[in-house]
Image (cartoon, rainbow, N blue to C red; front, side, top):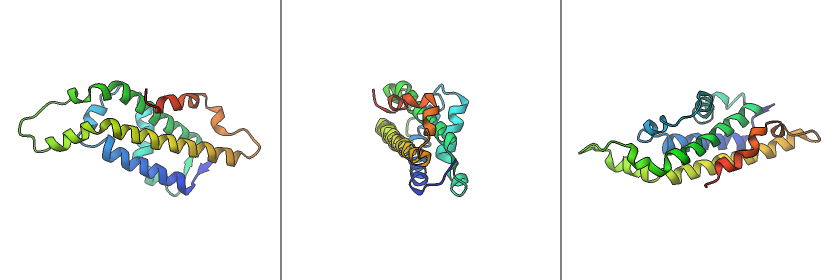
Length: 159
């Protein structure tokens, strides 16, 4: 089933914009790449956050969209566990760096920007489940056939 619902497509666009501007910006990206995540998670996250224009007209396959949301949730959990507690210490301080103020702002706001990202992904997941239930009518919704989705709330919630 292809998902083309405008609210969902708009949410995906917003998630991508927030991710590129506040999570994977030029200051934080080098540290993000140190996260130990599978290539599949990185690929799914990239499709969700970077390749939205490819899917604007054709839509997303529902099963793939659930997998992308799950990858984003796993990214959030890994970033909270491995980066948030010590992100400040992962950067080399360069004397007279003209971008020092911007880098400090990006580092200081990383945890709150990650929370906003997690909330956006959670809202997208909720809307996907509601869409799935509507489209299933009297059948079993598709999300129930993906057991990994059961723990998505724990991955997106703060500890």
